[in-house]
Length: 150
Image 1: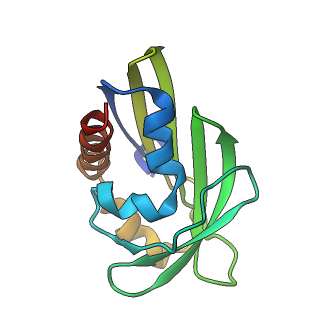
Image 2 (image 1 turned 180 degrees about the horizontal axis):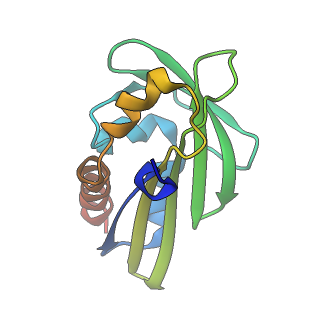
């Protein structure tokens, strides 16, 4: 399997400022509102991500808890994290959001799921099930929320 097959991306031009969109992503409590995988159940409030090294927790819809280790961060522009079961090292998949403002009210939003570093073959089927359509659903839901506040 090539690395290209392990990187899935979706994008959209959104009629909202990058700062507004970023707030919906960087606050884990808001993420279940726009999750296109319908996998995110609940995140405790007060976990707004501010820098690389932050860890936020998320309860999945099936009850499992994930610690999300922030590995990329640029306020208003980029955020990425590696999920892991509590107390364990991340197994090697990454969720990334990149925002490129076109102007003050329009932003290109790109969402990527990258599992090139995933080595646990028991997780491959689940990783493969995350498609560009799932990511596009997240981008579209995020866009609808951000545009509604604009």
